[in-house]
Image (cartoon, rainbow, N blue to C red):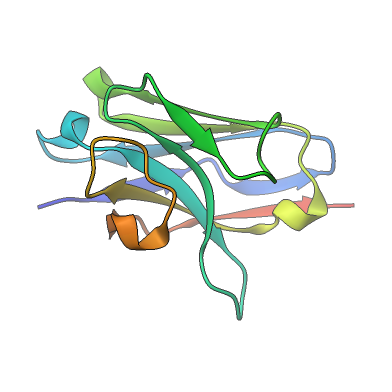
Length: 124
């Protein structure tokens, strides 16, 4: 019913950039807020960025502000995360998720559907 497929992860040196993409299925994609969350082994998922259903409103974790940009193309059913000035502490599995809401959500519990995750590794 809802399927999310992330891509764009990989290995990058500190200070470099990556652009993550998330292709979503379903005709109701544009009705919901979406977000990016990340996780390292032994830790809970951490909120990174969120965007409202329309794409007009965005929110970022403090760790992402000024470096990451979330965007969406509803016509293409695709969510993006542009990551610049990457740091080793950004290393994690990044997950694309669909929220239960229209407004951007910043809590893990607000998200109902998740992608498989894509690994981002930042070397020092």
